[in-house]
Image 1 (cartoon, rainbow, N blue to C red):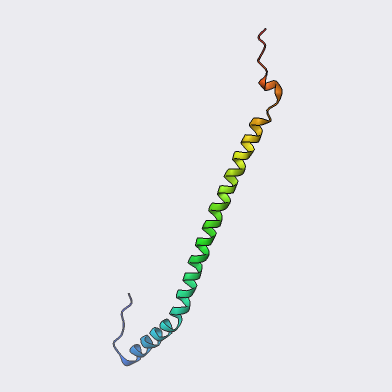
Image 2 (image 1 turned 90 degrees about the horizontal axis):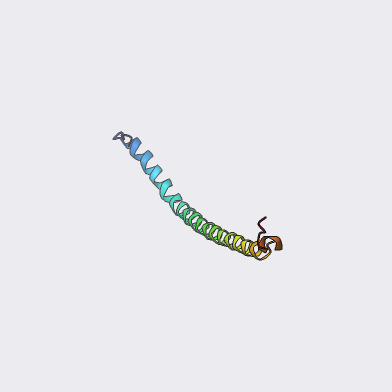
Length: 79
């Protein structure tokens, strides 16, 4: 942390900085909360999309198993 000079001028500067910080803190905190909520929503959407993709893969695998060409089902003839 930076060293502070102990004078009325530096005290005045620091007081002004603190006043600005307190002035903007509520809006910054609100923005932080909004971003956190949006991030949570995006993560839920991602999980849901990944689940849907997995279900599509499973359905695709089931369809491909049920629609095998008939020649694969025939016993192989040994010569």
